[in-house]
Image (cartoon, rainbow, N blue to C red; front, side, top):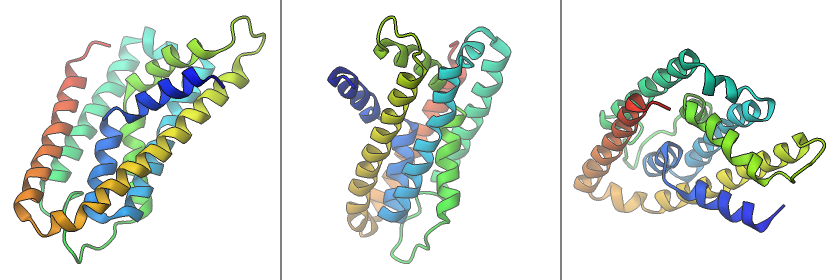
Length: 203
């Protein structure tokens, strides 16, 4: 595995996106252990896109406007739902000392859906992974699988790091309701913006 791929993948994973925002929100709202479930769900949500790129299904999304639009607007709806869920009292970013942990399964499912309902993720893998396959390889599939697995592992580790940082700030946030209100509004607005940007995107 080339150092170039590892560094490139790490930079991509570190860039703030819906998965990072979700993991941070859960870390702030529910603590470190819950953020691990969120990170796992987000990582698992990469799997369909990775498989699609490996078997060539991502090309269908690229050529079929209808398939792309259907998945895109499902993703838009879910991003808007996440914005509402964070903004409302008692939602995903509801922080208090006696907050009851949500089901790990539910947290993981939400993270999974955030990535599954992002049609650009499969197109990203379609464009990203082949660049690091050995030229002229008779069977590139094993290499593609290895590249995707490493990308997912990096995602999981980095997202756990984001969740840990958010969890460390939790006590500070609990003692400052105004900070909590600002964070809730900021996260909700960001999810709403990402949903709007996805809705307006062509490809």
